[in-house]
Length: 115
Image 1 (cartoon, rainbow, N blue to C red):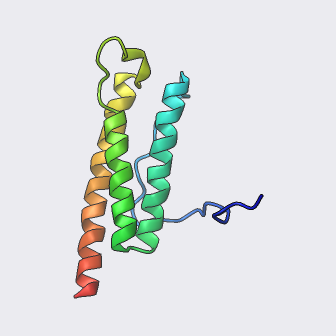
Image 2 (spheres, rainbow, N blue to C red):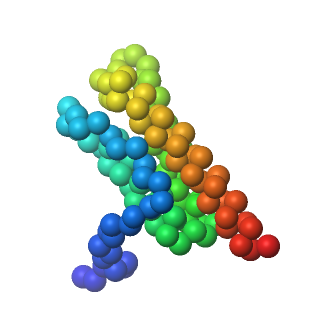
């Protein structure tokens, strides 16, 4: 059976301002691995949007960043084990803020190019 979408190899894209690197702490659970995979997808979408900024690509990054932020919120009882340790979550929340700033700059660039 043929896949509906072609397989794309992720490219290494050098951005003007790199996203803050995550501290080298290995994920301690399957939940942490999943949260970090969502964050990695967001970072790939951001790199693509910086290379080819369009309104659609910026919207995809915004949605991925919003989802990552929701994953980083402190979990309520009895689900505390299904979240990152607070120190890592704080660091990743800071990265989400940085992504919002970069998105605002890219949006300005897209809108000024369209005008």
